[in-house]
Figure 1 (cartoon, rainbow, N blue to C red):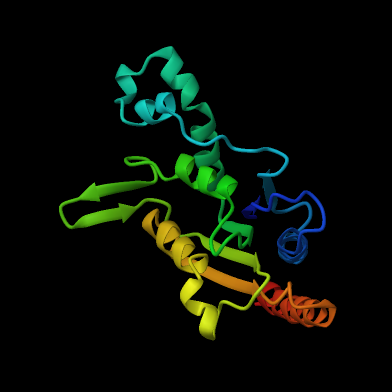
Figure 2: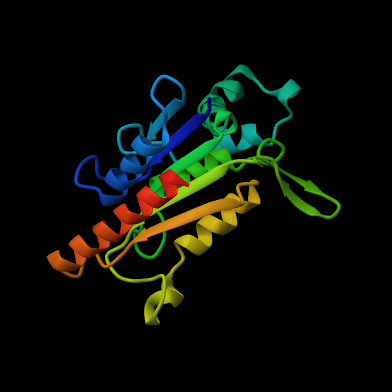
Amino acid sequence: MSTILHLNTSIRSSGSHSRTLSGEFLAMLAVPGKDTVIERDLAGQPVPHLDEATMGAFFTPADKRSPAQNQALALSDKLIAEVQSADTIVIGAPMYNFSISSGFKAWIDHVARAGVTFKYTETGPVGLLQGKKVFVFTARGGVYSYGPAAAMDFHETYLRAVLGFIGLTDVTFVHTEGLGMGEEAVKQAVAQTRGKVAELAAA
């Protein structure tokens, strides 16, 4: 029995390739009646961007926080608990302007907390969310995994860096690219990803 966190970061509630393909992978991966699935949809449940009160609470020792600060931390604590409880994390993450959605960035800002999901040591930072598998299903209008546009890929590079920083280092990316290049390109890209989905689910 395992726990799977399914995180959808697309701003589109329908018609999203990353949402559809990550969901298809989840359906193959999760064993009904055995595995627990946590759904976190950033389109249906938007995470607010950090504000001064929440940031202040982050850096206040737990035994000195006011009731208002504890309330400010409630969402962050819940999001972190979802990640901590998961054995596997499945993420649908389309590219927006060469990187991630602002809603996904807000989620990361609530989850990446010093002393909770990472810590600083004499030898450098250490991630505290170790031992989990992460699968990231992207959707991109162009092709950024290779070729001349690869230099503009701040999508996978950023996610590998920030996820690794909090201890999530076992990360597999599945890119669905060229979705803005016409119907035939879309069909080929989606078919290729579905083949990869089946391979990963069977592994």
